[in-house]
Length: 410
Image (cartoon, rainbow, N blue to C red; front, side, top):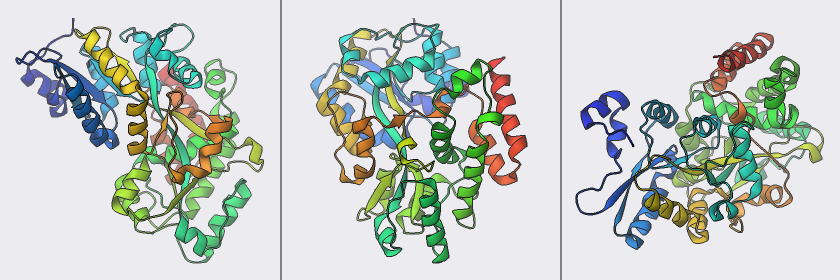
């Protein structure tokens, strides 16, 4: 049974954000109320629209959306209190792996719903749970990609061409810098934004099996991430005067206002930029990490997966909502609004802004986010941020290794 908590206790324990809807009880009007928990502030408006549509088709079900700040921390707290939301819309990362291993989520392995999802993304999330626990405890829904976003007008103004090698990319940054313009707009006040470049570099340089080998004691950051650290340090030389003082939201606004040529972000930043400047013409390309174009893969992962609590009192209704979300029309409408990609078979992102990375999805030159396989709670983004401030590479790589081991050995 789901543990019920009074509003007072809940507010004290979990913060006011959860008051939005923690109960899956009937709401007194004969309706079943389900809580949909989301870890993405960017998708709140999209979800509101889809919920309205679902409720119109299912008048006996009410969906309460809860998208609190620090959502993953909130979710882990709720896991310890046996108070999981009915439906979760969360990232395919280490937190999902933890929930999968805890045995608190419905298993979709072998179901018709799982068959509608592209197998490569099912494999990706199964690897997060690990080989010891059999099952598919979520349905990959929307996928994302790290990219170099560029301002087309400025790109042309500087006479640039899309680089396909690391040296060409650095040459483009040099050219912009020499012309007195800002090459890249960094937002490193929010440590997580440094992971965009870190993941692109790490995935292509250190390889997809780094986490497995690291856990087996066969490799380390000290051995494998030397070049990654060097290239990270090189990139920040092409930022602005206050790389560490600007946060993500302000960076989106600055880039939308034409403050730089390039922006290292995921596709999720595009709707935010276009909200500020709807007429802006944007392009994207995978970061060319090495000097061999054939080796440069696009980093893509499961941005949103849908999971259902094993303990929900309203399994039938929760599954009805999941089915509605996996419907091709709903899935298309989600990715169109969110400027995301779909994990659902046969649902494609056709926005011309993604022309530069479309081929990667079509021919499978994709690799997953390395940090999704780092131990939950390792705090890699803070260590990367600290390295970019202090620039002590040896100390930093050793610390990445020791923090990983510390979490693993808990």
